[in-house]
Structure formats: C-alpha cells, structure tokens
Length: 119
Length: 151
Image (cartoon, rainbow over all chains, first blue to last red; front, side, top):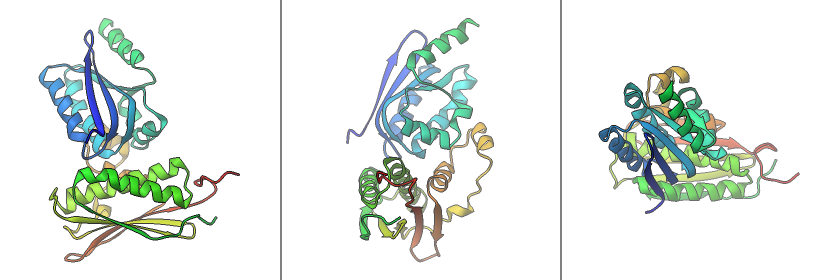
C-alpha cells in the first residue's frame, strides 16, 4: 500500500529526506531503513522535510529517537522542517522541540548546517 | 452539550499493522459524526492507533492471526473507544512515565505511545486480568471547545 513514501535528495554535505503520507507502526520500518542507509553511507547531516507528512504516531517518532544519538556522536544532526500544525502538535506534545531543531523551511535548516560547518 | 450520533459501532481487525489505517478511518468517521472538531477527532484517532499498536506489539508480540476489537460507544457527551484483545495481559499503567525531558534527553523511545494516549484523551482506563480479555478504554468529552458546532 502506497500510504507512505520516503525520498532522499543529496545536496552539498546535507541529505534531505522527504516524507509523504502516513507514518505509523506499519510504515515506520521504511523510515528506519532510510536512516540505516544514511548511517551506512556516513551521511550525518540530515534534514527531514515533513511538508507532505499527513500523520505521525509514536512509532514514527521513535525512529528519530533511535538514530539521533548516533548521528550526533558523528557530529551531525537531524533537523526537521515544514511540518503542518497537526504533525507539529504531536512532536510538541512529546517535547521534541527540546531535543530537535525544527524549522519552518527546509532552506533554513540547510543554511544552519552550512553556518555550523563554517564556525 | 448533546452529540449528534449516539450509535454504538464495532470493528474487528486482524492484528496486523497494515490494518491501522482502516482503524483510523473508522474512528475518524465516528468522532466527526459525534460532533468533534477536526483537531479533537485527530487526537482520538491517534490515541486509538497507539492503543492498537500496543496490542500488536505487547499483547500479541506481532502475531498477525489474532484479533483486535474496537468498540465506539457514544453516550450523551461522552465518547468512549474500547480496544479489546485476548493476548498477554499488559498493564500500561505499570509503565513508569519519567520526566519527559529526561526521558527524551536519554534517547529512550519506549513509552511514548502511552504518554500520548494520556495526553490526547480526557481519561484512559485499563481492564485486564490474566486468561481473560484485556480492555483499554479511551474517553473524551464533547464540550463547546471540542465540538465542531458553529456558534
């Protein structure tokens, strides 16, 4: 069932993951695989664009939790962008804004990676 | 405040995660018909998804041939969704919910679903006893602030 899609775009030093559809316990393994590939390829500067993400449950949120430690150990980060208010509310309820940088726009997150690289 | 639809509805699914989508659609329709706003209906949908996911994971350990029953019981201003299974008794209230900030900063991913259920609903009740069916009751009340009625 094509109720969830993960698409990866690799830019200069930053990988962008586009999420589309419904991220639940059924589709979370797809995202887990995508992150696993990024880890294998040693790509640790990750932006997750949630523009077309219609739904997220704790199974989806758990995937971000599973990889953030590894990513940060390798001096990278997972930055989240373009969330709809509905999706943001779920992240917010669980206190994710404490732990993750969340931006309105993908470009802001990419710029932040570039700024961090320079400093 | 009186809701619009007071009919009891039941849905039974096999314990597979690909059935979560139809559970969400079932609950969304019932919550809208009851009179909840889109925002409140979405909260109920997510809480029921979390309850069913917990059953698949903890009560059935991902066995796909078991059943989960979802019963929607509207009663006046009270909207109750009961998730019933006959798997391993699991009492989510026994799961300690530590300080959320501490939980997150230690990168723990378990327990998030139970925390969400409690945050999204007005009341969460558990009925379980070994050898019998387990029930999780998710309750939300319709009020002017949670209703989709135009003023």
